Amino acid sequence: MLNFKLSSVKFNATVLLGATLMFSACGGNNEEGANGEVAGTVQIDGSSTVYPVTEAVAEEFRAEAPDVKVTVGVSGTGGGMKKFTRGDIDMVNASRQMSQSEAEQAKANNIEYVELEVAFDGLTVVVHPENDWVKDITVAELKKIWEPEAQGTIKRWNQIRPEWPDREIHLYGAGVESGTYDYFTEAIVGKSHSSRGDYTASEDDNVLVQGVSTDPLALGFFGYAYYDENQSKLKAVPVDNGQGAILPSLETVKDGTYAPLSRPLYIYVNSKAAARPEVVEFVNFYLDNAPELSEEVGYIPLPADRYKAQKEKFNQFAEGLKK
Image 1 (spheres, rainbow, N blue to C red):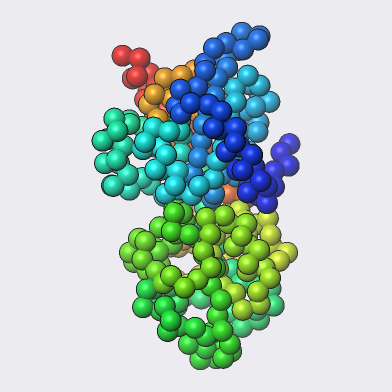
Image 2: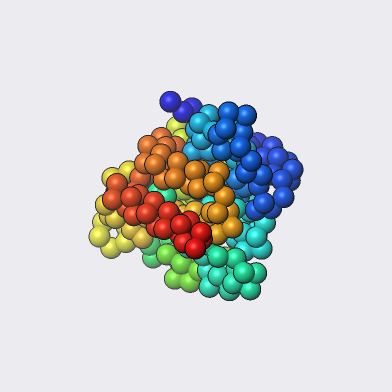
């Protein structure tokens, strides 16, 4: 049904950014379309991890509601949250929950919102396919590699395990504006936004895929969907949290055995946007189609009752705005 390529994220984000600038923030035109159908705009930005799900939904929705212009940008969870808490966009994609400081910023700007879960993800640790020494890695070893104290100190593979080769280790990971960075540092290092800084960083997961896939000495991490689409040029590393080494998969992420790197993915909807019919239709369409489309682009759907609960939560929120 849907032939969606993650490698198109960077191109689409650039094109859609230009389209986004054509519309005033959170003030889309919701006049009726030519056939009496809902019309207007839905402006979305944020996480590159959540982008594949949201863009897949948007692509299907555009076919159902051609008079609604849906734009989806990619500026990372942090970058998207800055726009969302200023009231510049209708919705934000987030690979982590809104932080306390972001919630305070939203409150200061009189931005009300609803948080909705849309899928599960497993942050995937990857190496180059020619790497024949890393069969698995422990959470403690990942912390040793990524903690702030490792900067300028942990530079070679044999510093992690003595039997690994005395060769440089080249690191690739999410940029500091990414919710993936926040989640990974909290889960592995023990403190959000705390890591070494001497690594190749990007909010664009395609950049990280390209880096690891062309560097035999690389180790990196990013969302499961990007690994899933690029399995021919990447090798996933099983992660051992003390219960045995587990590879990320649809099954191990969904049942929680791939720990501690399994996480939910979110969208947040601005209350002013939720008062507009085109946004209400889009969000309901999103929650109805996320089970199929999230799996189609390489993520893990929520249980059916959880989607039902998210839909009820959103519609109660939207109905409450009419009172």
